[in-house]
Image (cartoon, rainbow, N blue to C red; front, side, top):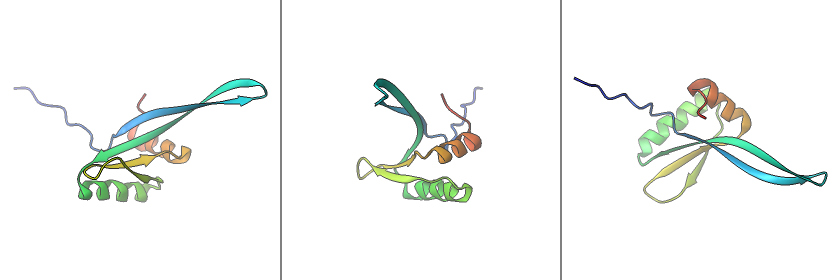
Length: 90
C-alpha cells in the first residue's frame, strides 16, 4: 500500500524577481527572491500570518481576486528568515 507524501502547507512559492539598471554606463541585472503563499481560507491565512509575526517575518497581502488571498514576503531580512525556518527553494 503506497502513501502520499504530505505537502508542507507553509512552503508557498519562492520566486526570484529581477530588474536591470544602468550603473556607470553599464547595464547591471539585480535579482531578489521573494515568497508567495496563497490560500482561499481566511482561517489558514490567519494561522500563516500569525506564525510569520511570531518569528518576525514582515509580510504584505496582495489581492488577485476575491476568492483567493495571497501573502507576499519580499524584504531581504524576511526572505532570509523564511529560508532559515523553511529552507530555501531554488
